[in-house]
Image: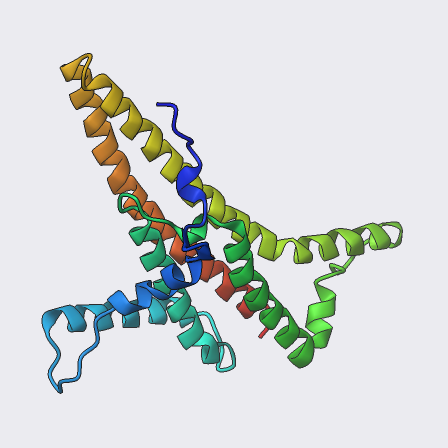
Length: 226
């Protein structure tokens, strides 16, 4: 019970070298591919899910926004597989690191904003000053809208980091309580263990939902700028 709760969030090393890069590259290797003309059921189900997700995310975009479809689908698959692998015992979840989530959020957000300023500069600038704003409030509103624009990638990264980290901490605490109670009171242990199983199911759902929310918000930023 004296172990560090945040030990599982420390980036692992191999022979003193950071292993985060290898861990990040590992999830794509788990995605099955087929070299045959006729796919099996697993490949068929995977392709159906990808098409369904892509169709739902790209429905609101125009032709220019749909050029990002491959990137957005790859993003949601990467985040979802990384989150799910992080639920395995003694594993490391890269999406609990704010630096990595910022590294994903900032380039995507910046690309969408730059595209908006290049293609629709008038509409992009109009977001900084809503129509009908009283003259005395113009400087304040411009500052507020600028801050709200710049804080978008930080909000994306913090949301993903906080949700994944909170779930892992709660599972760690309940798991530790289950082990501690196993030698004291068996009925209480069974109750806590049941709660742990239900929480694990919830965390699987959260891992998938957070991947979808992150990608959906990137898509909304793209929609506003195309």
